[in-house]
Length: 113
Image (cartoon, rainbow, N blue to C red):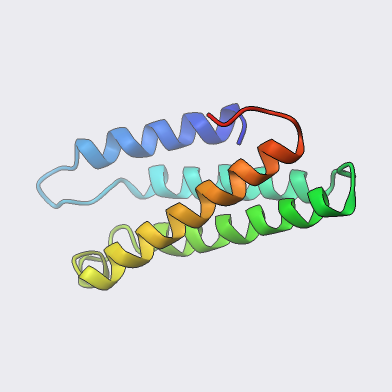
């Protein structure tokens, strides 16, 4: 997804592991990751990708990012996050994101991470 997204995601993962006594991730960490993903998506949608299928697959990736962003926006809402429904949805969304990402990488002749 690019260096800025990878760095923001690493920062988010660190914050998740090191949550304080209030069990919250600092809002700036969450918003930083959302902003990095959104910036990537805007840039990706403005590229003329080779072939209609790649263009469609990039749009699928952006939709997968939108689902993840919706999940991230709930990160500090214990009423939502501490439910099996949220965990199931997050897992489903991460799996869809992984699939979409791998499809775009394949379209571009790149290996899976």
